[in-house]
Amino acid sequence: MRKARARTNGRAVVYTDYRKLLDSRDVDAVVIATPDHWHAKIFVDACVAGKDIYVEKPIANSVREGRVMVEAARKSGRVVQVGLPQRSGGAD
Image (cartoon, rainbow, N blue to C red; front, top):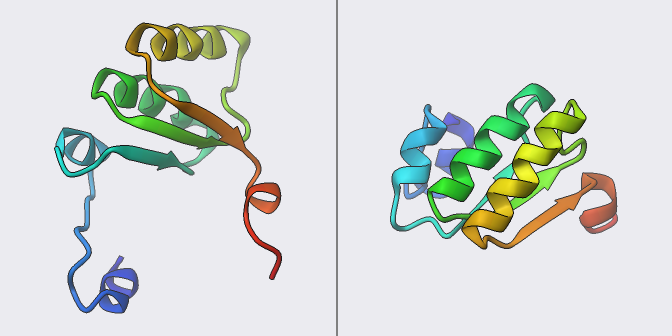
């Protein structure tokens, strides 16, 4: 975090708890690139917080998690995209 913040001359806001990020009115969308077992929880919380979402594959660890996530997205009306980092980014 220190290195990333330094690259913005200290202007980047650093969060150590994703829930604080979701509480921010300055944030419209989130990228979920956490360890896989966190995807569903953060996804649902982001929907409830009214954030649009890009989540890296795998979207979930079980069919049940996936169904809960789809229901949260439908209920909240959020824009959601699932992607593979190596397919979604530019070639280096």
